[in-house]
Length: 206
Image (cartoon, rainbow, N blue to C red; front, side, top):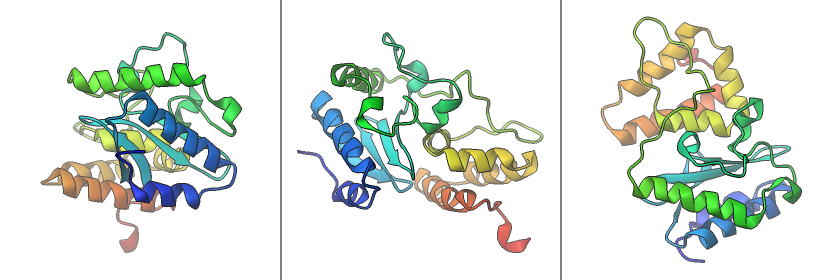
């Protein structure tokens, strides 16, 4: 399989036994759907890119998640995109076994359509059904990378939503103040670790 990343091999290898066949199958489908897709790791999760992020997957203790970066703009003829409570587990909800996956041809169609969105230069946007994290005073733009992190990790999303508006604002302001995209991505990765532990931005000083 071309355009692969050995870090994803390692990610799958250390995942729970139930998750290994699911992640392996999803990975194969992505490349089968569009061979030009490149693998990478962001925020300790496997991502698939082509002219921008296309989709991502993740393994948790009892389920896997698979998400489309631009799920809000993605055509949904088979009604597989989950916009309810389960959307925090990924675009198609919690995946605990192979039986939870849509048919291969359907999922590959969605992957190709997601690639086409990038080809067409469509910009990502937060789902209309998903409220932006509360902030104080003036509204701060929420980075798409952070939105995807919340969508892909229920624990991080739950912990972030438990923070007071001021605590949420501390993180969002920190992201907004980054001078470069690389610095912002690094800050989001660090935030993922802290938020998963229930820590606020300035936890060291509290």
